[in-house]
Amino acid sequence: MPPDMTPPAAEGSKKWTVMVFMGAATVAGNEPLLAAAEADLKEMRFVGSGGALNVFVQVHQGGDIVPRRGRIGENGQVGIDGLEDVPVNERDTARGMALLNFIKWALYEANHLNDPRYLMLVLWGHAYDFAIGRTPTTTGVVDALDFAELSRVLERLQLEFRAPGAKLDILGFDACDLSTVEMACQLEPFAKYLLGSQIGVPLPGWPYDRIFDRIRNPYGRVMGPAELGSYIVRRFCESYSAESRTVSLTLLDLNRAKELTVATQVLALTLASMIGDPDERERIAYLFAESQTAPGKPYVDLADLCLGLVRYGGNAFLAEAARNLGNFLISAQPVRVGESEEGVGQPFVIEHGRNAAQTARLNGLSIYAPHVAPDRDFDAVRHLYQNFVFAQDTQWSGLVHALARRD
Image (cartoon, rainbow, N blue to C red; front, side, top):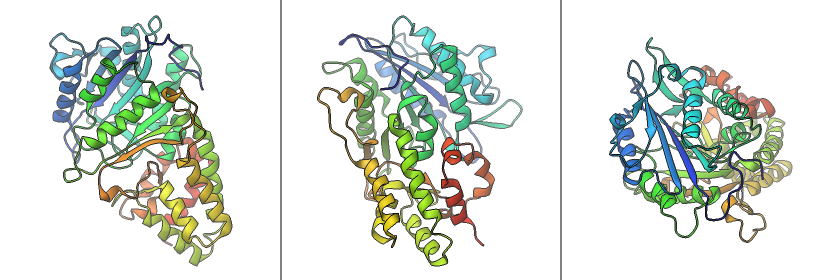
């Protein structure tokens, strides 16, 4: 296993520090988030920090409103008004500095160096166009944290704590459309596991009361990262009825993200060698469209795409590449008894949950394919997509942008 920011602790003394960074600003054209933020803070407060759990929160409402933060304890604090103002020199959201300052503050407040714990960071807010946390600044400009910037924040955190290669145990997104190949490969150096959804996340999002209660009041021992991630997937998906909101959530094993890059590159190269033929290009573009995650979204479910390519791709080399990638995503390894805390023996998609018939073709991991959402301006965000490590290390970007060209 990779190094961790949490040194090994004695059995029975393991604990969690959870840091929730909330972008709750109201931005024109976006669903308001303030009420949802208040609702989630209420759920967190219902459990509070204590025992095996430490919870720290920072809320940004944007514009001239001072961001607030605090430890969610048992001192009567209620909602955003129960938090404290962030110091002036730690408020700037540009380049992810506010997030970096929040994490450092939380780790020092938790006395993490002397009382090491499992670490989970949750990024909460609107996410689209390869960025999260759209926040109006005092100048009126809308700032957002793109995922290349997020990587730099986490890399700087490693350096400042003199722990190169150290990783968060879980990096979670209470936000839309972020269980993707691109995110997994981007965040592999900084987290062991990724929690994210392939589709939209309804407000108010995760059931924080149930999640935190299970950590603070465990049955037996405190859950390890893979166990807690699976627990969150299950509790989230059962929190919404199919009649009210369609949901999905996934836990990914980032420890194997390099293998994912290799297997996806083989598929990309095989597909790229075929699309020069107009008939093959049309067939491939159609199979991509059949695996779209949701109407209007520029993503396809990767395992479902692999299945379609195996069945209908019409090429033995393509079928082999697709089969190998699909098996990597969902095929378990030999299970090691007693190692469930760390997910040893699980497939890359460790846990995937869904709650409705509309999500039947989702298998837990998406990949970018702009041509399946022709009404979106993929050229406007292409430069942001190119910032992904995955786009730079594979031929996938060239493949899907070739499929998206209308010439």
